Structures are given as C-alpha cells and as structure tokens.
Image (cartoon, rainbow, N blue to C red; front, top):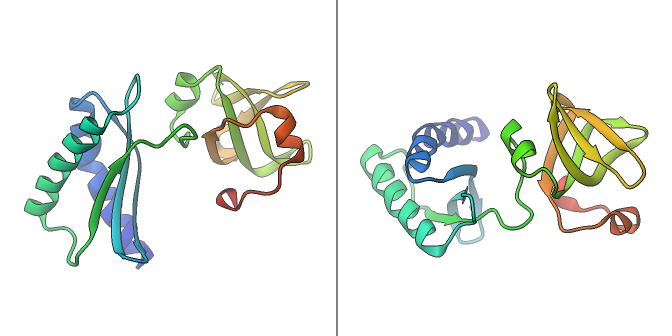
Length: 169
C-alpha cells in the first residue's frame, strides 16, 4: 500500500506544483493516509506573506476539480488544504535560503560532533551545505546528511534541556 500511496502523491504533486505556482503559491507537502475518520488527502501550501483561508479554499476548489476529472482515488477521502504553520518543514534547497535568519531544527542521518539533532539559526546554503549557526559555533551540514528539517520557535537554551520529540523520530 505504501508504494501505491507514494505513486498517488507523486502524481498529485506533478499537477499541483505548477497549478500552485500559477496561483502564486508553493506546495510544501502532500500527505495521504488513513486516520480515525477515514482517508485524508492533506496539502500544505505556502506563499510569501503567509497563507490566508481564501488561498486554502481556492486551492481546494482547483485540486478537487482535477481529482474529480482524473478519478485517481478509488475510495472516499477528505481533502484538507492548509498552511504548514510556523514550524514548517524545510525540504528544498530554496527553503534553506529563503528562511535564512530563522531558527531551525535539523535531524541528521549521521551525527555531527556527536549530535543527531541541531537547533540553530539558518545562515543559508553554500556549496550544497546548509550553514547553521549554533550557540557557540557555526556548522556546515551536507544536504544529503539531513534526514528532516523544519523551522522552530525553540531557542538554544530550550534545545539543550528538551525531551526527545516523537515527530522527529
């Protein structure tokens, strides 16, 4: 089922990204999964200045129309369109440039100085490496060593004393 879900989300991404670009927005993430109340197709969108409810409604109308015509999903599902929130994921190279100056939490595939989770201020991207300013040093992280990354509201002190967060596991 996982492979079929991946194919479906890739197909939706294929038509959603250019559609959203035409609407002045970007597709941040697509999720399609079974939840307590049934199947949910969730699109997270963003744009410069943030996403308004009218943006979500417009994208929902457009995507619904395409999904209805294409008939890609054989069973009942709910479509949800929303902003990724203040702690949005960082996936594309452009994200690390766009959000320079903001706090980020980065989970690594391989530890860096014994750490697998780093919290610091993004300083951009140089030579395919994310530059992250930590409390006492600035580190460079190869893009291929990043497992997950997202903006965060957490400061350096909280990062030292925090408990492990399950969403990063």
